[in-house]
Image (cartoon, rainbow, N blue to C red):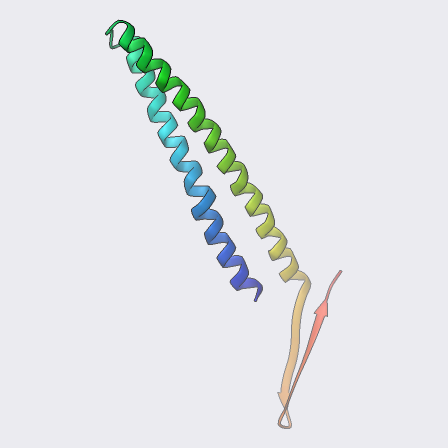
Amino acid sequence: MHLIRYLTLERDNRFRNGYNALFFTGSASITLGVGILFYSVIDLGWVSTVVSAICFVSSGIGYGAAGYYGWQYYDGRRDLAKIVDAERRASLNGGAGDGRFTAAAELKF
């Protein structure tokens, strides 16, 4: 039961937070590069200044979003570690014999 829950939450965490953090980091880096390109190399007067300012603001917002999703990803990893710790402390013991099935739960604190 714990393994199914762990795998489901790990997949959801990776898709929702991990890939979003990678996406926003990549897009913010590309936008920053375009902003630097327009600011230092391409000289179109005030158009270059406006485009570079928009790119710098967009890049800052992208890095902020990447930080948020990165934080959520590692927070989710911390929750997943709690599931693994719970799995280590619990075990199921049992056996079958004489037409009967016996089971016992053992918890370690």
